[in-house]
Image 1 (cartoon, rainbow, N blue to C red):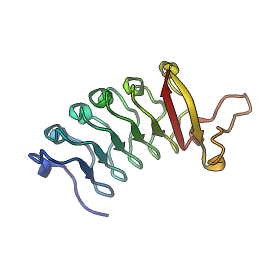
Image 2 (cartoon, rainbow, N blue to C red):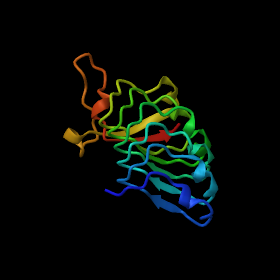
Image 3 (cartoon, rainbow, N blue to C red):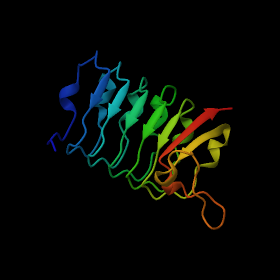
Image 4 (cartoon, rainbow, N blue to C red):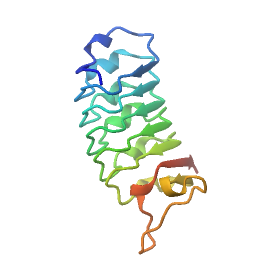
Length: 164
């Protein structure tokens, strides 16, 4: 584990494409990412981040890794990168819903496993579900069903969407 607590030192790195600050002590994302116009991949896994606030300025983001943080919601922070974001990893957080995800019109891979999800937002109806993988059934791509016939989204490991 490292001890990085902020991303202040990144200001001015205008050519940076890929940033990995995994396994640190970050509690927030901060506005510094807005100074990185070419940032395409951001990995902030295994920190203490509670909010995605600060991502609004990341308009070129293609891949975002926020696994194993303290996120309780996505909020509106994904709006800035919604036009390009294709891969989102938010597993092992405290998410109870994926509200805010509907703005990600190019999303292809979503890992929201190990959260407290019970359903996907109804606004994702514009997507055709191609594949859902769970740890118990990762090869077939089938989603395990609850007794009531409803999918248990907490078991989902990978979800792949295709725009209709």
